[in-house]
Length: 558
Ligand SMILES: Nc1ncnc2c1ncn2[C@@H]1O[C@H](COP(=O)(O)OP(=O)(O)OP(=O)(O)O)[C@@H](O)[C@H]1O
Ligand SMILES: [Mg+2]
Image 1 (spheres, rainbow, N blue to C red):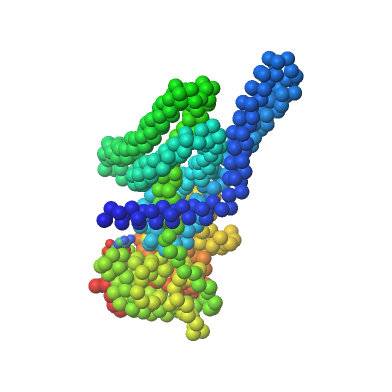
Image 2: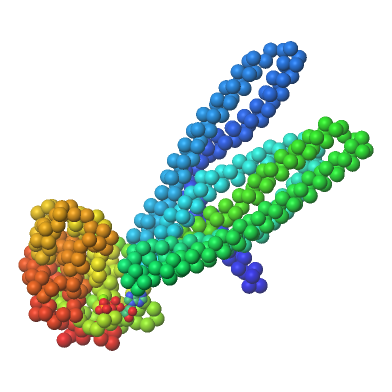
């Protein structure tokens, strides 16, 4: 029973995936159909050419005119070439547009969803879905599916020709079709599971590559080179295992088909031979029988070969659709004045798992206040900030922002517009120092960038870099020191000129004197922002109006 239910559930999924694909394909349908028409015109022309050849030979033998026919033949040949070139170009463009279309939509979806929901996936896995799976889908929609339709049309044409010669044989060929359908359905289901495994192992393999390259230093520091190489081989072996299984199943499927059709051929042959023996048909008709049976066979075999491809498209569609199903984060238009912002947290409860990190937390940060958040490592300080930033889903309680005019708004994705945040850890991008700072405020002028850098105690060192603001730094600030990276991250927040500033151990890598000058810069910001500062350092506390400690999942006023 369980098995049957599973089958049924999977059918539903397949249907969902196909529907989703159809929705995606709609805008491209016209061009796909045009390509199919091109392709079919090739098939028809080749039939016409066969006929022409016969006529040319016949005319030549009988001494009739055949030059016009040769010219016609030539025109067809050239025409076919032109159509071939055009449809090949079209397919390249279409494939690229289609896969990029999926990539773009899914990418936009990812960046507009809750951070936490997306972060459940490994970056390598997301990359695989965005590249390999999206590519798979594009190949399927632009290549495989039109191919199937073309083969089906070919099959129909041959079938009716065969029917004309022998209805019995044609019906016999039809009988084979459900057999083919059942065989391919049965294999297809198994294939799909394997295909998902193949793509999952691809994700794992990519995740490992991406992570070990990003953390090459750690690999080397712990002399893990050999282990890493072995791990790669192990992952490759796993992947290979799934690919080989898939290949074997694919072969089993096509071999079963092939045997079925060989049998069909033999039956047709035997039937023809019986008719000849009974003198019911001529040798000529017999040869037509055999060649038509062969012709039926080839598109059906072709169709069977498309099954693994369709399966792989459906599997990839499922994986991409999964990302599509992550709920978007809500965005509300900000209508209130945002000069002086306070944060009102009411009965907030949140846990990444069943275990709650924060329970029933209430806290009111008044506009213009500097509040320090302290507490031992792992207690939930960063988590509290993530909640204020609306990065999480499934939160109980309220976070509201309010101003001095009595207006307020519930925290949502848009409220980040008036928050400047310096996250914990190194969060720089590769690119120039300027690019990094501009992320805080894309419209910042050169002046404003310099001002922000001065306030974050970064001006001097940036000016000392070989190309100043245009100096290129690597991933995660590669090429500059940790403390320098922190100062650029702080400048990125300062340049935003937001009324609410959140620093998560933003000065942890700075020496005392530099830290002091950053905090003085913070105090000098105009207009003066509301500030939430997470810190482990006593020296910072003198700059704060209040001190809030997190312990036992609660906030305590110190
Ligand atoms: N993405 C996550 N998924 C599951 N658990 C998490 C996640 N991030 C943090 N946690 C857990 O939540 C708890 C609070 O983490 P949080 O990062 O808020 O601590 P913190 O107070 O900022 O610590 P630190 O001072 O070390 O930065 C920890 O027990 C941590 O293990
Ligand atoms: Mg933290």
